Image (cartoon, rainbow, N blue to C red; front, side):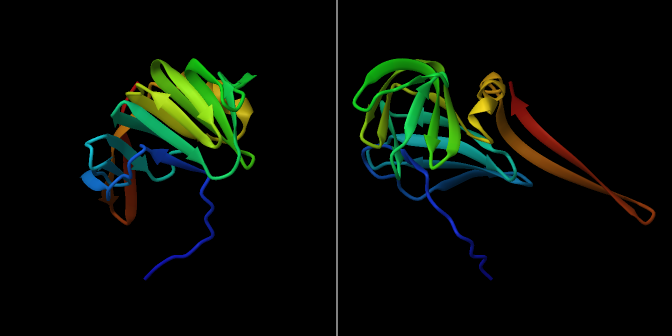
Amino acid sequence: NSIFAPYVTDLRVGFADPLQKPVIQSIGDWSIQLSMATAQHESLQFTLAHGAPFTVLHVTGSTLQLTCDVPCQVYLDNTQLLAPGASTTAQAFSLVIRDHTYILSFNTAIPVQLSGNTLTLHGAQRVYLAALPTRASYPQFKQDASTEILGTMATPEIHGTMLYTTYSLATTG
């Protein structure tokens, strides 16, 4: 059986060369860790967890690209608008696409360039990417940018006629 729902792409993450099919690294009870690579051995490794609005991308490759499907606005540290065609160095920024807001935060300040609808990130190694409810949520998510979900587990127990379930997350940060 398949479930169909409307879906609109806001953002594509990758490299100049196309990513190949994802490879499963590990599976938790409600999370999955994946890796994807190009033919030139640039790669992304990340964990997706049901209900978690964020992931951390581990990047192997010199130049990561984020392409917005429509014109987007980039706000350096959620305040200063990055002009199209501009280059700067940033450790975090918000990205607004179709009234949807995202945060990208890096483990160190990196060169960032906006050209058309494409953001080029030079030297990114660890990228925290989250979908925000609003731009006003930026400080809270930036504070949590060191957190990464490593795995998930649900442990059920039956006591008489009652089912009890303990949900656990393995995290960093």
